[in-house]
Amino acid sequence: ETGVTQSPTHLIKTRGQQVTLRCSSQSGHNTVSWYQQALGQGPQFIFQYYREEENGRGNFPPRFSGLQFPNYSSELNVNALELDDSALYLCASSSPGQTTNEKLFFGSGTQLSVL
Amino acid sequence: SQQGEEDPQALSIQEGENATMNCSYKTSINNLQWYRQNSGRGLVHLILIRSNEREKHSGRLRVTLDTSKKSSSLLITASRAADTASYFCATFSGGYNKLIFGAGTRLAVHP
Image (cartoon, rainbow over all chains, first blue to last red; front, top):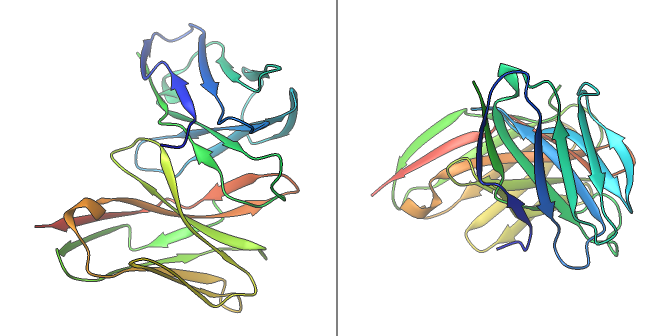
């Protein structure tokens, strides 16, 4: 167990809807990253939050947005869902005491299906 | 685009055999990591090797790194059915903890 929890575990939405995914980081971790993993592929970096500010973004459109709260938990919001958004969404946290380029602790993910 | 590319894409072996997975990457790195993923769920960190290291061991895992060839290998010795999973190599890009993953190797270990 990594101590990173995500909710919900599974979610089914229809095209055009909006979705919010949640992540609680491991105790003491102030950095949260979100990844999208399509079936049979490796995870793709969406964005990272550090102390409530976005701190880097991958090649995802603006309809993917996020928040980080003072307790370092985080949300991923996706608007105007498309069929290709169907994927496993992973949250990862890391320790404030670490230097950059150290290991990440992943949650179990939210499986999103868009119909 | 993906930084790391694993080879083979899929590997099927019998319990007790060794499993070797390879990873190639494109840019210079500070370190390279290997992660494991069971049945499409969360990733678990296995091992990290730094750019100034050539080999590292952790239990039944052995990782090598060849920075001149921009490649790494993960060896799992005396495999078990419980080792059945997908294995990903990953490297960092940018000044923050943005991990770039390959497409992974799907390992099946048969009893």
